[in-house]
Amino acid sequence: MRPPVKVLWLGRQKYKPVWDLQKELHNALIDRKLEKGVTPESPPLMHFILVEHEPVVTLGKHGHLSNIVVPVNILKRKGIEFYHIDRGGDVTYHGPGQIVGYPILDLSYFKEDIGWYMRSLEEMIIRTLAEYGIKGERLKGYTGVWLDINDPRKVRKICAMGVRVSRWVTLHGFALNVNTNLHHFGYIIPCGLADKGITSMERELGRRIPLEEVLERIIKNFGTIFDVDLISVERIDNFKMKNHVETI
Image (cartoon, rainbow, N blue to C red; front, side):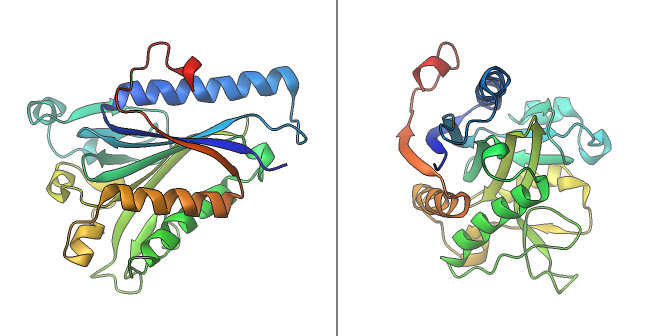
């Protein structure tokens, strides 16, 4: 039986309430697993959260504060929040015009292999970009999706990734630059890589792209690559964390 996955599109949200929602859904999957074990004949409901964040800089658990090139209080003055969080990877930026995805999946129903999971997320983005004529690729030794990987002078990242896996249940995910304000990446050394650039779909194509159009293509490719039963795609415009988990 294919795992059922509910897609939640939260619109534009601050970082912390969505992080809290991730943790609630993540913990619920782990609790269910501890209680019932792995039940292939009746897999639990999983979630794929999609969101456009208000400006925020996040630092992974093994990241270096030195990769934030301005003091955190200056970031806050510019309206950019900061959080030190529990994902892998270093420092990254989220903001308007960027699609951020958080799959909350139990990999015991897919493949218990973090490398496989990361490559699958990358493939989802590579296929989405291809639909716009953008050639996304993997860069050996790095996560995420990149352009012009064979030219050290031009290589640039279009989609960052960082995850955490506990008892094979996933947390965090990816950030695809669609119409993102790339100037905000100047406040950090993205992913700690000073010698590599950052780009967006808008910059590559020379035009703004409807965010929800890209969203629909990501969801389609997610369903295909992970071979899940997408039971619904729900837009939640007035998202509030309190008592919300029970309703989804």
